[in-house]
Length: 170
Image (cartoon, rainbow, N blue to C red; front, side):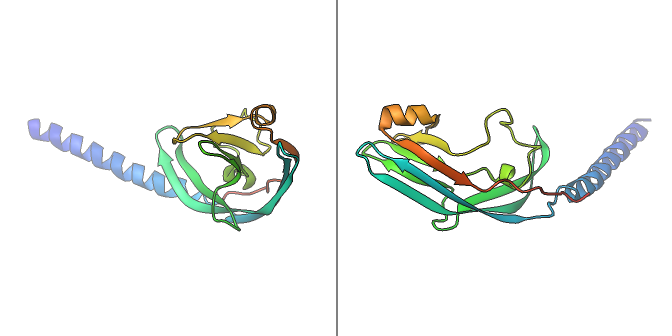
């Protein structure tokens, strides 16, 4: 009787394991995007406190980076994004002895048409996303008003490509 219970438990466990692996294989396949990379030209013009006007332009590259999994979202598409000219994710627009202000040029998920899994859906998705870094790893987002009032930087124009409409294989 005891052997039958152990055998039953092992069989159920193996069926669940095989079923889970089978489901994961087919579930992952539907997450592959049709368009796996994109180039998004941008330009940012701003004026600093001393009256100088600065123009930064470039191309933001977005690339599919595989399938990820976590307990909160299950399977999800991983994307990476960087500025073509520098290889960096962000553009530095201001720096002094203990403060750096970056412009996050874009969000790869948003730009590649992968809106479903964005964790911050209710936040405005239109760049520029400006954030401040002190002499630590902490950062905080800044509004255009904050950056103007605290650091004398005024955003004049922000031009960026629209997100693509992507499809995901089923």
